[in-house]
Each structure stands twice: as C-alpha cells, then as structure tokens.
Length: 117
Image (cartoon, rainbow, N blue to C red; front, side, top):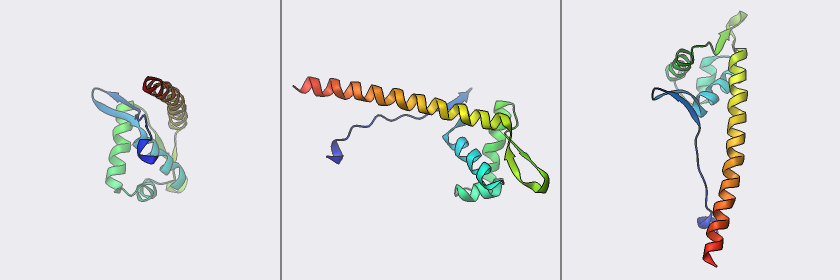
C-alpha cells in the first residue's frame, strides 16, 4: 500500500554561524555551471534568476574562503579543482549518509513490525 510506506528523510548542508556554506542547492548550481560552462546557462537550467545564482555562488565563495569557479579564455566558466573536490566529498558524504539512513530505516521497521506481533 502506497499510503503505508514509511520514509526516513534527511538533508545535509554545511553551515557556519547560522549561514549556509554548502548544500544540495549549491551542489546543483556548481553541477549546472560545469555542464553549461556559464553562470547564466546554469541559472536557466535551474529555473532561477542570474542574480540569485550569482548571489549564491559569491556567498559560498566568501563563506568558504575559496574560489569555486573561474573563467577561461572565451569567457567560458569552469569549476576550480577545489570545487570539484568539494563536490566529490559532498557526494561521498551523501552516499554514506544514505546508506546509514537506509540501514536505520530497516532496523526501525523491524522494531515496528516486531512490536505488532
């Protein structure tokens, strides 16, 4: 039964002093920049304004204290090596968390099912 499906939900983001450093939205923005090679193309891809995309990118760079994108010849934009590493590490964190949450969900469901008997 679809209505009886129990889900365990979570979100991961990095925060400092109550301000987002990096999370799923920033990850999606960087991946779109990587795909489109421009911030305007990335903004269109994500259905957001250029100003919002620019603001998020600049806020993340300032809060992290590192450059995440750079322009190459021909004004194409690409991710810096540290941005690529950040994405890789964030993916790994999400994968490990997803695995842990899946295992915890199974244990919780087993406990719930066992208590019904």
